[in-house]
Amino acid sequence: MPRRQRLINRTACDLPMTETLLPPSLSRRLGCLLYELLLMAALLLIATAVFLPLKNRLPADLGLALQRLFLLGILFAYFGLSWVKGGQTVAMKAWRIRLVTDNGREIGWGLATFRFCVALFLFVAVPLVAYLGMQDNGVSIARMSLLWCMAPFCWAYFDPHGQCLQDRLCHTRLILREKSSAH
Image 1: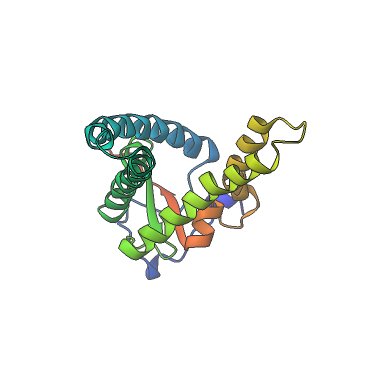
Image 2 (image 1 turned 90 degrees about the horizontal axis):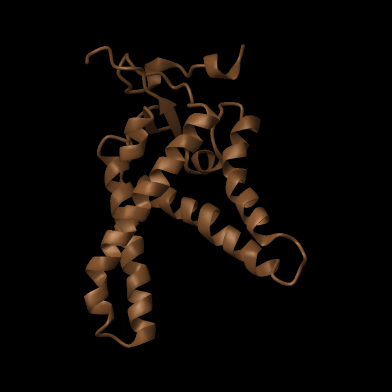
């Protein structure tokens, strides 16, 4: 049976009958990621503009550290609220993707925090370490970092349920929502 047709037993989940536990395709996930990156860039630009007057009044090192913490808090608030209140960010709504637990239930704040930290590790910390480690080598740093950022998504091809690495580690899953028949 093809991977996209495998379903999890619906008796153990809280999904409406219009949803299944089918994973979205990799192209849909990447399209959603691109849209999400555009939204995050806009959000971070606005947050930076709000924080800038305070940063200019502080010593340079302290101001930079507080700005990074503030921006990280803004990102966590965006993702955390979106995941906990409905399981979808703005980009996930546009691409009809929803985040649920392994058994189809909505996630809580603890799991949202854990998933955010795992995503930070996979998409920021690991590529940064790879970048710093390859500075002296003749390897193209940008290509290697990009490949490393793609690794969690490519995991879905090897996962029996089509889950990405961050979802497997957090016991969550992305599901594809059905098209709404109401216009």
